[in-house]
Image (cartoon, rainbow, N blue to C red; front, side, top):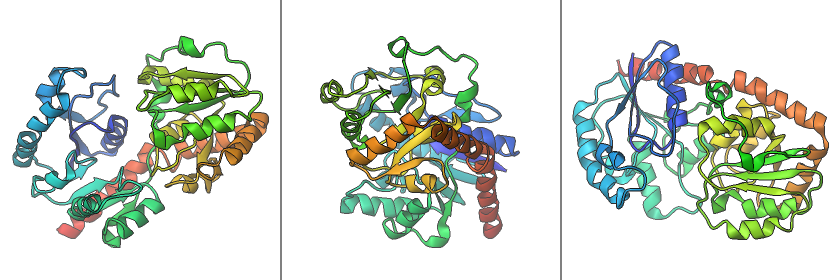
Length: 371
């Protein structure tokens, strides 16, 4: 079976490449169609092919080139039309569409088409966003959601027929646990004393960092690490950190894969205090490293907590978040229990081989129905 995985703008290279490698191990001929990722190293191809067919000229100019977005937009339609002409596979599996409202008109007329719903709709979508989601997902023969909540959103909000929706979990990013070139702990984080609470990932307003820092004012006996590239003004966060009971350290820059293992190995628990989310790659990184987690009750997070893999708190509730964090800071055995459960899950239902098994079964079902 020949499968093309399509992520034109390389929005999720770790996911794309982990899925491609797992499908290749299952005997699938996999080709990943994408663009050059400019933000740092990505996993090497393992048993599959990579074709960087999109945005080649703008990528060659580099990340900091002037008018990069405009140049990408100029290349977009010609690249999509070339893809339309040249696409050839038994199954085309879309991870993202860069300009969904336009792209649904440009996709090759090859079926079956599958799309993974990495993002369905924003919290308060406009009518236009709803209409675009309905057209994009509705043009697919099957849509993959990572949670039961995501499946319901696809049906109720995006108008996808229930029989076209399939729930397949997101895999744990276990490749990070065996990198050959792992780097030591960043100098900014050396010398921690006592338990470390880690917030990791892009710093964005919806991720609830203000709630976390308000909660951390009440936490004793721990350090908080806030690590990630900022997509917001961090000065208010730094001012709030000055009022915390424990030490707060910031690493506000892009962190490449080789730096991630040392950070997660040293952390004692991982916190995702989000206001809104469907799922998170950080969560599946924490699973891979067997870390205790505290999650907000948003998106698919409650389904993770219901399996005994995390502690759950209401979003935007500093008191509840502080209580959950303090319980785990004080409770080494509770942290160990959650961490062991996370490790079992990463090796079982959230392993990429299991994800690939379910994905391949879907492909075969679609091909059989078409035949």
